[in-house]
Image 1 (tube, rainbow, N blue to C red):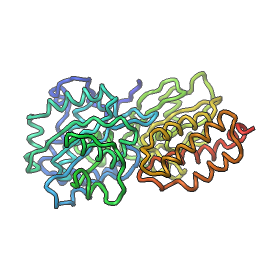
Image 2: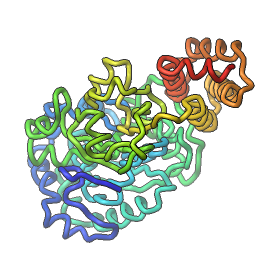
Image 3: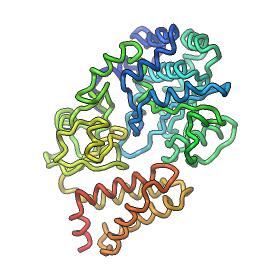
Image 4: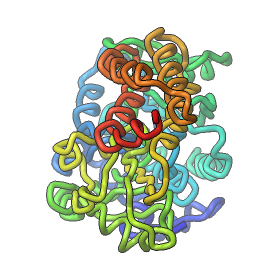
Length: 420
């Protein structure tokens, strides 16, 4: 796995490395700065223009401010969301394995900024190395000086807990995560059904308390911003991008892996400079951006900047930063059918439109891919793309539609060829 080191993965750690080594390399400095003026942390995050890196790209400071302004409840919660499970996305597991102390420090900085006393690390249970590294790191923080400093600055004891997730893809959705965590904290277990919104987690989250939910990569950026300043962070990016981004590069490339690069790096540089180009020197056909639940990019998009605004202008999304590269010669109908099958299997079944819609899409795509499809099947898929968006409690069904719509836009001729 290739890693380009800038600031997220520095200082690097290995599983079981002692906290002292991390501190000697500068770890904990941001927390010592923040305890003197906790309110300054939120201001720094706002000035830095840090976005949510779990897929939404939502400005982090807005979530933080909403939770910070809630004062009625005695407890507030922070959920550190590490339920990474989408095909092609493997950045958070690397952070958890390599630098768990940095993530813990980022979580404590968020807690200080928002008045949070309960921190829950919610991790995909299949990431066994990540769980082991984080568990060992948390044990080193308990009863330590830095945790006491943070608790004293907050004025109440900060409790940190590790909760393995449910092994369900849908469990990464923020309200589904809260549902699962509530069951585990009370000694039971609930299926991670997404909840309707509003109310939003900032107002009514875990046990009805204000709850902040941030992705692991998002939290990993916080210490560097507090330590070096918002201007420093913004200058790390290219164009309209701020900071750095972990791009998960996979598929038909010579050097797949995780690359930490300036936010706004072009697709061309990611694939051909850092990824070494395509296997066997084949031409590029397409790229699934942000995992398969987003839109496709084509060779015409090679010079697009991989940041939230630039991709949004092209009708796409950066998502998690996963880039699944497809070379010429790969059938797109088959690939789309495979991903649609994954999402149909992952639907929790709570919303009829999602349960039946994703299953129908998957079934029709399989028919077309195997030469049994009809023009009526293709027409039905197009109708579902118009009907289904926004019909579920979460965004799973929207992701399937984005994938399908984008494949129609760029590769409709392959669907028509499959029908023949």
